[in-house]
Image 1 (tube, rainbow, N blue to C red):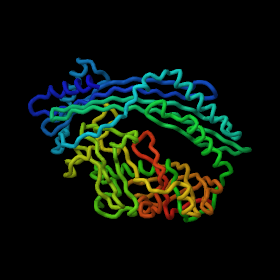
Image 2: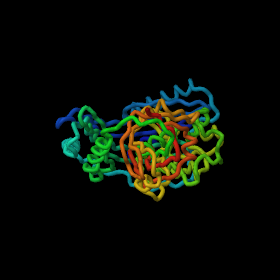
Image 3: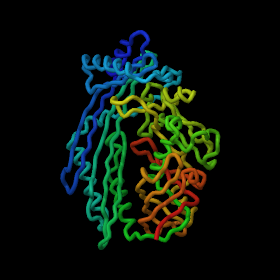
Image 4: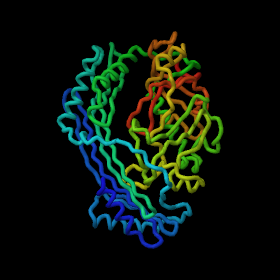
Length: 447
């Protein structure tokens, strides 16, 4: 890590009079393996390294990147960023981050043993997962895919405005997608296990998850339309939070693309609901000590006891809004300048298990799968209408499976209709965590 930070600092030190210079240096390695029917369908392993450089001068910004850390290439990239700044549009809010005095969290997110895991062992894990899914139930007809994947990322950022930061993290997963059948009917279900090192992965857990989710939908029928209580499975809640994450970006608010614009201080959800983005939580796979501009990450409460507290900002969006950065700068890698986004969005868990929530709901619908999220959710109006599959809830327990349904409401109404938040917080790779959520009423479109 020290060599990456030294390189970034060396670039920043080359700033000319009147310039602000930022260097973001990253190095990564990732693997993805897919097996099918006892053989390897695909195997890819890639390493990458590079630098992204921003230059701000006379309220104009230039950016350039290169997929090499060679000294000559880095020097050329700095000159290209300078040239690009000359063509930039003047903007008084442009400028690099400066230290704000917040101390970084000490996080242990790196597992060196992941780098020592051989490709052969990774393939064995995927094949073993496929084998266990097939043996999980007589109704499993095939496994569409069994996968192994991992990633190890190191990054450093430095500026001539006083920023000097580095971080690294590792993650890995196994996942399977099973096809179950009875007669002419088939249903699918997915399962997974995630961790930071291979020892964290539970192949049995992933296999059982895939099998159960596939077979419990067998016999699903299209139910009559109704308005009824709806319970969102943890994975569906994760998708909902991903939608919410975009609406809670200060950048989206400034562009008029958020349903929460001009609502800070208002009661937007039930008092039992608190929503936070906390990259300092080591359980989150988006956890980090620093954001992508080098500011120390921190816990940001976005909704506290139902009341909207504010939005997430990087340096630029914060200056436009007249507020400090919330250290919420994110990047897709060294090839892009920083944007704004969540890293570890989650609801504060409640005290009830999913089974206890089902018992309290009594009659309703458990949603296990949804489709059409990108086209079926409007982040400006809040309208939501998506395809779904799941199981009816009768007498407080799961009953017959249903499919070919649509669930509809608005995000605003759903947040005000939450009647229970589960204690089953589940982190996945990505920017959000899932937890069982019960909503008093939604529209279910069926037969």
